[in-house]
Image (cartoon, rainbow, N blue to C red; front, side, top):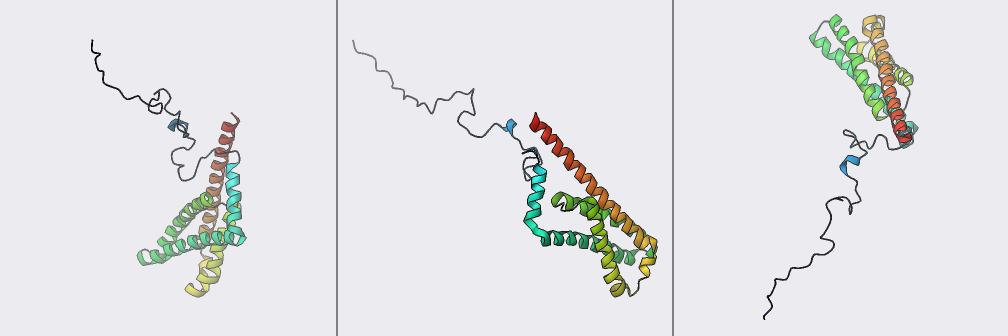
Amino acid sequence: MIPRMLPQIPARSNNQIQPRTQPHQYSKRPPAHFSTTRRGDLFRGPLCASKGSFHLREDKTMTEFGRVGRAAIIAAHGIVGWAFCGAIIGIGRQIFSIQATLVVHAIGAPVGFALLSLFYFRKFGFTSPIQTALLFVSIVVGLDLFLVAPVFEKSFAMFASVLGTWIPFALIFAATYVTGSHTAKRKRITAEDCQRKDGN
């Protein structure tokens, strides 16, 4: 009796046989649902990496720029805000009456400094809200007093206008302080939530 020749089936190696019940057995990367980075934080890193992460980030930023660098950054923000206010006055005079221009300036100045302060506190935040408000207003007042009035206006009559000068100064201070306080409060609440999650 001639034995039937059966086709030889190549034996599979152990590496080719993997159970589907353990898809991450040979992978060091955890599944997607175990990721600690939330949507929107891909470029900032995990929010709850460790306790006091916000303080660590602020300390690192403080030492990274140095005292002169921090002063330059704060001054640059104040000068940008002052230039924005000057642009409102310069363009407004070409389009509206002087009274309407001063009204637009009184509205636009605090809005511009609020946006500027929001960027500053989120990106840097070297100073407290009250310190930042005082510094920004001091920069604006100093530039108006020593540059705008004697050089451009050739007169100090602008400081006699409540609507054109003093109301914008007060609103710039208030907008910077409120924005900084709100940003610091949100950071503090987020840090407390992270610590609560780490404690659990």
